[in-house]
Length: 253
Image 1 (spheres, one colour):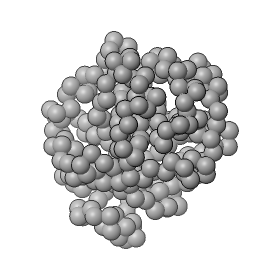
Image 2: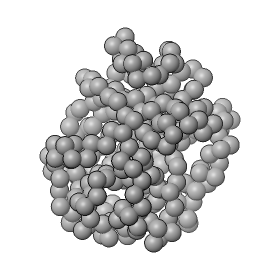
Image 3: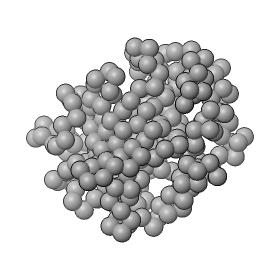
Image 4: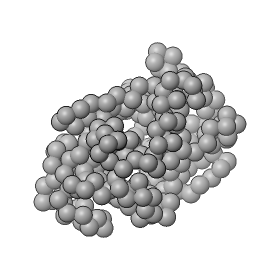
């Protein structure tokens, strides 16, 4: 990780206010990739002229913690497993260093992601009446949403200099509930966020050159499988993804 810290210090910074005013992208198209830390170290120097790095109070590796909510049937998870084109995700997310938290509802429909959120005091561990009312207002019809898992990770966020896009790298991922904790070492999830898919993105060009293809993945779904066990949830459509992830973590992909 020391090498990674050294590389990101070479990027020019951008502040949160400037980033939000220029590239908020609450309605967007997301393209994800999976890497390991060694690949990330090799890729980042090639991006220095095209991206600025988000820096908040001198921090370039901010930490995130999220609480995910679902019903007793894990309907949100099942919708994703079934590849339902119109689906939701409900979570509370806290930006640890900034001490800011939001209740967020992500609506995935026909390949686009629309995110709505409201500010909250902290990670609550449960839904209040006010929280439920907001979730319902976004179009979610499920009732009795409960906390099903919590995850933590670190994130590097880049903003395109000449392209209206954000690029994030999530690593040090961990998932936990009352019974179990799982840490996914050496895994990096990259996500390119754009108003519409533009293949001329500098990052996309690097991925193409390295023959790293887009990879649909959900941290929430991976967390459910890891915490609840393959014997307890359907996961057959994720088998190949899990194999790919394990190979990457072991530096053999």
